Image 1 (cartoon, one colour):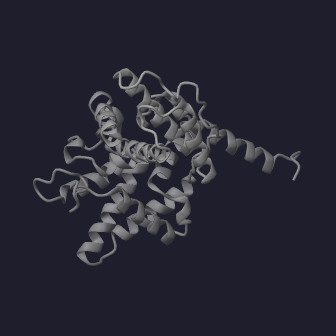
Image 2: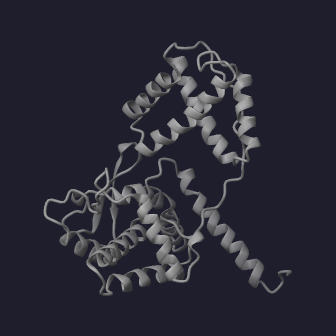
Length: 302
C-alpha cells in the first residue's frame, strides 16, 4: 500500500513539476525510509498521527543525521502528505505544524584561482602526454570536462549529460536543460570553446552525447567524473577531500562575484530559480574579507 502511494506521488512530481531523475530517486529513498518507520509502529501513511512524525524526526536526530538532511527529509514528507490531502486520500496533514530542523547553512567549499589554474594546467599536460589509446582518451575527456565546468558553472549532472547538439555551431555557447526542464544559454570562454570543439570533432560520427559511455544512460556517469577529478587533484598536489565537481561550480560563481559580476547574472548562469540560493556566494566573499582584515590589519589582535 505504502509503495503504491509513494509511487503515485513521485509520478505526480515527474509529470506535473518536471522533477529530475536524481530528485525523484532522493524522494523515493526518503519516503521509503519514513514509510518503514511508520509501518514499524503498526500504522499506515493514511492514518499515522503527528506524534509518529515527531518520533521519526527524533530517531533521525539520534542517529546523528545532520539537521540539513533531516530538514530535507521533512520537506519530502510534507509534500507527500499535502499530496495525500489534495487527492482526498486522508483528511488531515500531520506535518502542518511541525517545525523544520534548523542549522546554519554551511559555506560552500571554494578553491582559489591559483588552485584551479593548477588543476587545469595538470589536466592539460596529461591530455597532451602520449599513452595508451584508452588513457589518452580519458585524459582528454577529463581536461575538456574541467575546462567546461569552470567556464560555465554547470551542475555536474547537466555537464555529463550534454548532447552533442547542445554545442552550437561556433561552440561559444551551450544550450542547457536544467532543473524543471528549463533551458538556458550559457557562454563559454575561448579556452573551453577550443577544448570542446576539438573534443567534439574527434567523436564517432552519429554520437548523440558529448561525453558518450557504455553504461545504461549512454553518457559518462557523474561518479566516474568525480573519481577522476579527485585523482587529478591529488596528482596536482591538492587535497582530494577539497575537490569535487560541485566545488568547481562554486569556484565559478565565487570568482565571478569577486571580479565584480552582477549577482543576477550569476543566478542566471547557474540556473538558480531563487536568488537567495546564489547569495550564499556573497557570504563566502564576506568571510574572505573578514579573514583578510583580521590577518593583515595592523590593529588586529592575534
